[in-house]
Image (cartoon, rainbow, N blue to C red; front, side, top):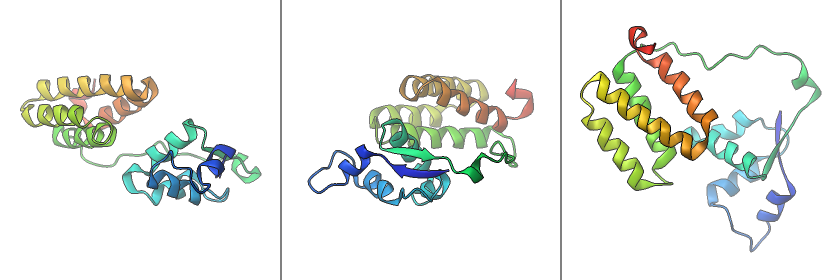
Amino acid sequence: MGLQKTDKARAELQPGRRSLGQRERALLLLADGRKSVQEVAAYFGHEGEQLVLQLLRDGYLSQQVSAAAVVVQPTAVDPFDGKRSLATTRMFLFDICERMFAKRDPAQAEFFREALRNARDRASMLEVGRALLDEVENTAGAERADSIRERIAMLLPEEMAA
């Protein structure tokens, strides 16, 4: 599936039009119909997928489905082969905090950073995690929050994941 610019994106890229930031505009330039979401997102590091999804939601990009892509291909559900631990879960929550709130709401990000630093036991860390996920749900929707919950379940030690 290739990412394509929409008419809205082509208008944004015209001289004198600047409603998007530099990273978003650069991403639009890469969308040529041949590169997949993953290929374009890879140019922008850990923020790439978020940028692509936002531009898709906002109508700047569309996905072109090729005949070759229609063939049923096995898809892996982002496998996790790492060690399950509270420390890994905590680092993941810090990462989500940075991705979701650092630019959009720095005060909220600092609140969650501080709360995660002060969470010294399992119960308090999971409580902060729940609050963070509630805010993610308010900001990005239930689907995004659910996908993060699923990842947390994979990171927590098995006796705590239930």
